[in-house]
Image 1 (cartoon, rainbow, N blue to C red):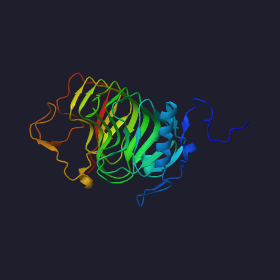
Image 2: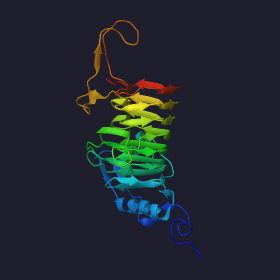
Image 3: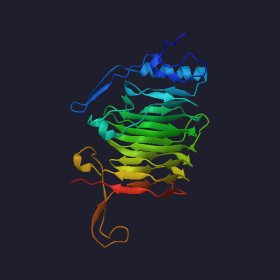
Image 4: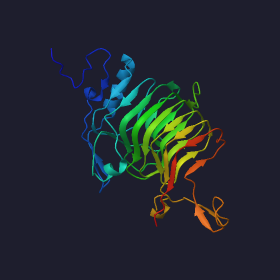
Length: 298
C-alpha cells in the first residue's frame, strides 16, 4: 500500500507535518509596499500542535516554504517546531534569496508572534526564520516565559516593520507554578531587523546558555531589566544599529559625557549601551569570546 499523505504520519510515532493539517506555503512579501499576502495558516498550525500533544509526539515539522499566519500561536511542553533551515533577514527583506522555512506572523499589540506556554519544560524551536509583519507595539517576536530547559537553535528572528518590542523575550512566569526560565540552550540565533532590542531579559532568570549567533537591536543588542544571574554568552556577536537618525525610534536618548569613555581621552561624547545589564542582575554573567559592535550611520 502506498502512502498518500505528505509525510509518513500514518506510521505510529512519526512526526506531525503541518501540511497534513491544511498548511499552504504560498506567502509573499512585497518589500516595496510592505504588503504580505498568502493563505492564513493559523488554524493549520494550531491544529497540528494540538494533535502532537494528544498523540504525545514531540516534533511538529514545517517543510521548506513561506507561511503566513494572521495571529500568534503557542508551543506547549515537550513539543518542538522544526523547519528546514533559517536565513538572514537582509536577504529575505530584499527578496534577493529566499530559502528554508519562513513564518510571517501578524503580531498583535502587547503580545508575541510565538509564545512558549508558561510553566512547562523541554519545548523548542529550530531551523526556521520568524518575522513579524506589522508595526504594532508587540512585546516580542518570540517569547519564552516560565520554561525550564527551553531549546532554540538555528533561528532567524526579526520584524519586517519597526516595532518597539524585542526579538527574543525571556522572563519568569507570574502565574501557576511560577517557573523561572532557566537552563535553556540558545544556539546560533540571528536576531535582526527593525526591532528595538534583540534580546530582552526580564523577571527572574538563571543559568541560560547563549552560544554563537548575532544579536542586533536598533537600540540595544542585549538588555536586562530583571534579576538575571549566571548566564553564559559564548562566541556571540552583539550589535546596536543606533538608528535614531532614521526617525524610527523617537525617544532614543543617548547619554552624554564630557569625561571620556573607558578611560580614554577626556572628550565629549554621546553613547548608548550595546549591552545593558540593568535591574538587579549582573551576578555571575559571563561573556566569552564575544564580538561587540555599534553601527552609527550619519
